[in-house]
Image 1 (cartoon, rainbow, N blue to C red):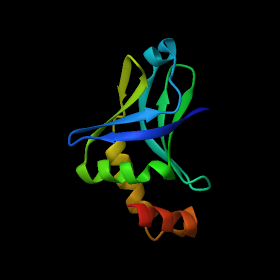
Image 2 (image 1 turned 45 degrees about the vertical axis):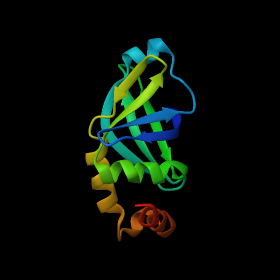
Image 3 (image 1 turned 135 degrees about the vertical axis):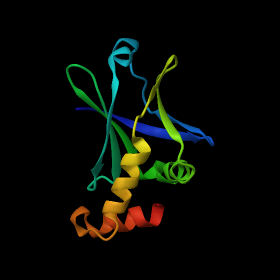
Length: 124
């Protein structure tokens, strides 16, 4: 699964724009659809939003360094859009709902590892 790291999140009252470290080429960007789910990488301290096309899945990695901005967007309950390249933005459908579910599930749940649970509690 190809992975793209989030470099920054521009938070606004209604919508937050997720910036990636590298652009996604226009042909792939045109095929991508929101996967409507968020996974957790508790070893590398990341929330991962899944994008997909007809052939594969792609990971948008929200690593610990962007959690303060992610928390700000979460508190405002904004919608999320990822900037795939200069001309293409894609809605991260169900991002907030998935994040709420995960945050509730992680609190007090040792299955994610104590260090990850503590990091999430500190950030959110």
